[in-house]
Length: 89
Image (cartoon, rainbow, N blue to C red; front, side, top):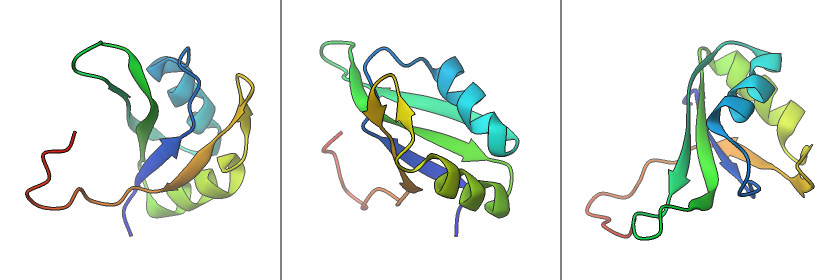
């Protein structure tokens, strides 16, 4: 298992700082990243949060999967590696 979490269904106004502060409630956040569309520069509605330990990542999933943030329920799960050779995003 990895410590990197996929966070989906983000409101387009959520900042990386806000996301990091939220997840810091369950442990130490190593990094946050919100995906941006390379053509428009707008947020794509999902991001990633890396926690310092596996147990903190598991606690964050339990705490924040379904959590309402700016009127939208978050979808939080373990981040899956991108398939090799994938140029989709």
